[in-house]
Image (cartoon, rainbow, N blue to C red):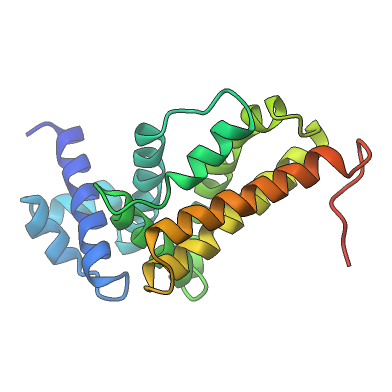
Amino acid sequence: MAESDARERILRASRQEIARTGVRGLRVQRVAKRAGVSLGLVYYHFEDRSGLLNATIDAVNLAVQERNPDPDDGSSAVVDLLVAEFDDEGDVRDDSVVWNEIRAIAVFETDLQNGLSRSTAEWELRLHGPLAQAGVAEEQIPEVATLLTALVEGLSSRWLSGQLGTADAQRLVRAGADAILHTARTSRVPGETLPRE
């Protein structure tokens, strides 16, 4: 078995285990068994549980990018990308569970915070080009990307916990993203930061 193949199988198994049992229920032995590799090989590739979790969040981010190639035609592409994060088909729901689980546990397991921050920044960076094409001023793009990401993360928590159905989550993320984009494009002077209270 090729080394990269084993690594990918371990990451896939980790995503599946977290989606089924949560981060607190994650056992490296079960990941190894699900991946069909030795426990030693898991530790060889990831050093420890924290390394495995950090690599897993990166794997989720990469999977999202592969499912939804970079949007490139403005606000409708940005909104469509965000809406695509709410789907009952394929791995979308499982990957959302993994993201939310790791984001929640990072409050207590601080060794996950840097990896989570890096992965979140990569996600937000994907929005920069389309936001510029949508008419958002360059200096506003980082804040707008953060707001849009927070919108998805907040609605995702409600969706995964059964408080919102998929269609409602999609509708709400579309409405929220449209409102954020409208405000960013129309009601501010270039160079002005988002209003703070």
